[in-house]
Length: 112
Length: 116
Image 1 (spheres, each protein chain N blue to C red):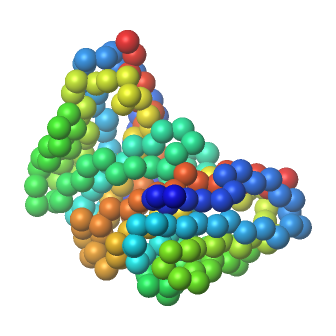
Image 2: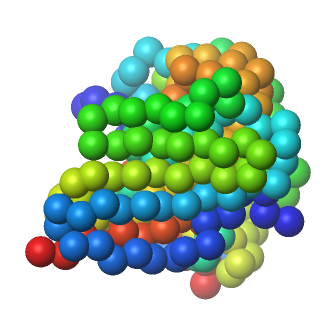
């Protein structure tokens, strides 16, 4: 049973527009969430994170929103750039543990 | 070399072979991890090492045998694998494992393993 779900395997967005990637989780013990980005032939790289005490965290063009009651988080990228084309993984953890539980990823394609 | 490196990048092996995957981190971290990523599945944590000691084994079959001789090196020894073990094997490191908060993991590029 997948505890972290990314239901959209792919997303295509025009350059300059907003990209919204979604993630749902089922384990109410999760209290820390991360987004990783992966280019082909490279390992995932950390992008942004959010603790459950917050509902929003912003870093430049990237903003993560957390809705605890809905067990849902989303990553907003605005404006989207062609270099953002990659696979984005959502991950969750309990703050006191070392284990990350990942989603299956969403492939983002930013078109010109 | 910087970051987390993995060798080989690609490996094809038969079911009776014995091979090893190597991971090295140049970040001064104390924790290292092995993950498996199969097609259309999420990354699955396999093992965690903290200060060279194994702290987590996520019910991994014994045909996968990890080794961590020091905080910078991690190996995954493979023997009598099955075709369903074909996957991308990723190594990661982090400063420490006691708390995931503010403790992001840095990943290597992975080894693409094919078992015939």
